[in-house]
Image 1 (spheres, rainbow, N blue to C red):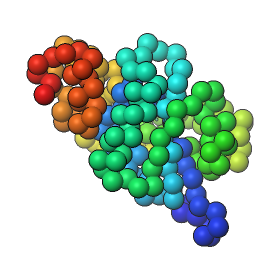
Image 2: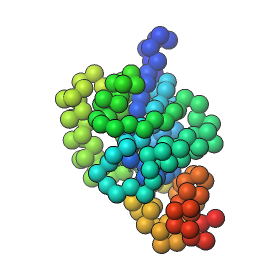
Image 3: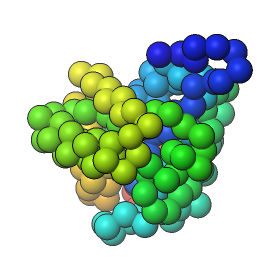
Length: 173
Ligand code: ADP
């Protein structure tokens, strides 16, 4: 799916709440970054859910982890409003989403059809989760961290440290 010619790099956006992001999100971003020329992670500022991390914190956590991973063609921006408008604004042709289950598929399928209606020039790229992260969600991660569980295998180090700061559990080192 790479750009057809050198003059028009293929840009993709990967939108989400990422409150906080975890290894399942990082896996999708890493793989998507191998498909497009440039990937922009879009941190949605105002999701209809209670947030643990501010938009600035969610953006910063992604930035630290991307630098640690050496993902040179990935950058992070916060955004408000429609994902298709964010995609247009960033000259992206592709919106990337991750799929864990049939439930994810149903929601993303409906969203994809709405996005096509709103912005037919933008293509959805639905990527299947790695098996290791099928069970992983931000809400479950927060619950585990809140109750003192160790999230080290589930998130990059900057996110583990941020969860420790939020919940102050000694089990998260
Ligand atoms: P939302 O956009 O509903 O707030 P998230 O911020 O949790 O959801 O996730 C953003 C994107 O990452 C969505 O496309 C979601 O399906 C995907 N995603 C979430 N968890 C995983 C996972 N464990 N593996 C792969 N993709 C995931």
